[in-house]
Amino acid sequence: MARVVHFEIHAAAPQKLIDFYTALFGWSFQKYGPMDYWVIVTGPEGTPGINGGLVQRRGASPAPGATVSAYVCTVQVDALDETMARSLTLGAVIALPRMPIPGVGWLAYIIDPDGNILGLMQPDEKAA
Image (tube, rainbow, N blue to C red; front, side):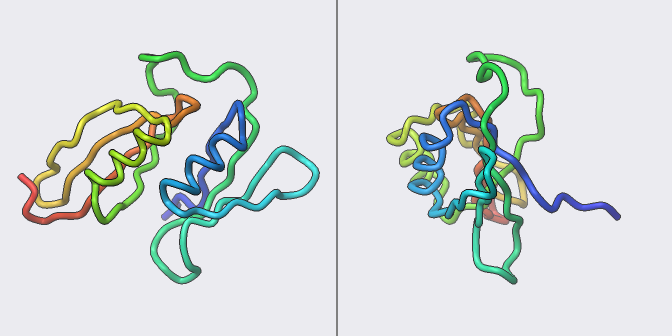
């Protein structure tokens, strides 16, 4: 079975998003080669999850209210409300407010400062 093993975030202003995701999740970024590409480490090796990359956006950022034209990744967080509040202070906006996914947890979508949609999930089997 094929599994997702890497993700990419497109950025018109890479340093702005590097600062955003570092402050929001504690992710680390390292420049890769001579191109405008940064490897993202999202957590310790051997723990669940995948790492990704950040790349210079080719073209305009998504317009507000535009339909999604890429995969939406969801990040597991310990405290959804706190993460959402912190994301707003860092320049994100809410795309979809907190909602229950029964038996799974609480889900919300935010839009990062460059227009990318990102899911946030707090596991909670009692969510209803």
